[in-house]
Image (cartoon, rainbow, N blue to C red; front, side):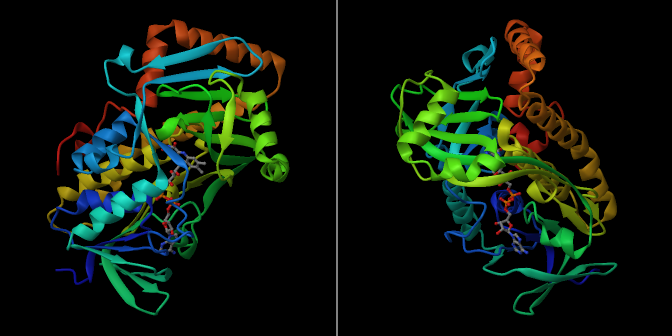
Length: 401
Ligand SMILES: Cc1cc2nc3c(=O)[nH]c(=O)nc-3n(C[C@H](O)[C@H](O)[C@H](O)COP(=O)(O)OP(=O)(O)OC[C@H]3O[C@@H](n4cnc5c(N)ncnc54)[C@H](O)[C@@H]3O)c2cc1C
């Protein structure tokens, strides 16, 4: 019998770590979550004002966790997606109607999702939130892992789940390598109010300097993610509201009429970070700690939530040692293909659409037209956008653990 303070410690109570805690709350596992910042703190990096597009598959996972009613009241449905390439012909349109679903996805601000997840954690007596607190050291023993916190407290667990973001402290403490690709691009986010109703439409417009995404939100606002070259970031952030809107309008066009209002702007440097070895002895990396993606396809959290669903599925069936190497191996084998596909597709999309080569521009136009015309290609794209995978964990199939 292994003696440890907890079965499982989740390091990082951001969107992915908090979702895992909720997914496992009704299992017999004794769980702690260690989070560096108070949920409502302005410094909490996971729960800021950016809009997060939740794929239909993520909605299904949250439904299964019993969290959907709370989240749904803060969500705006995406009923149509319009993909285009500035300066070139061709566009692709996806519609919920053609897929026989009410919505292709939903948009919620990260802050509101954080509030809902943290409320759910508070309501479960069995989940212990240790916050604000940071992990500073780690000792791997045969039967458990010991974590040493900022205040010198020592906590042990049979399994550590590292959900501590792209710059994972756990990865650094283990001295593990990560593949990093700097896109030399920055995402500028803000809420935009257009003149015309968005009617649930989401737009992805590729431009020679990077993609622009506008996601539908409440009060006819749109959540903007404008990818710019990092060398242009300061100039764009310093523009007056009017100049910002007119530069954005020039790049995005008039599909939503005149863009009339912009809220506070925030910027994020964009890198692909992928952990080399996502499982270690009694340690597993999930979410951004395992793979942090360019936000162009809005897949980062959706992918992380599928990690959560699969890990919860594997752990819920474990009657003995939840840190057993075979369990972690099963989990990673299950997740590897989806992770590789999403990482590679997102990276290729960014590379392909950030080029101003005119021949590539024409090919992209032909590609978008073909996808729009070919039912099979359109079905494939819709399945990917909706986050549906053939090998669904139980949570994604709507079954409670
Ligand atoms: C501009 C932008 C737009 C995006 N839009 C979308 C979208 O539309 N759809 C989508 O699916 N994804 C989107 N994403 C991606 C999404 O934001 C990430 O996938 C998601 O935040 C990952 O969550 P996480 O919990 O893994 O990591 P994080 O959000 O980075 O959270 C990590 C947590 O760990 C804590 N932590 C760190 N170190 C320690 C430590 N030593 N001890 C204790 N705690 C620690 C941090 O405080 C934090 O709470 C977007 C990203 C960006 C930048």
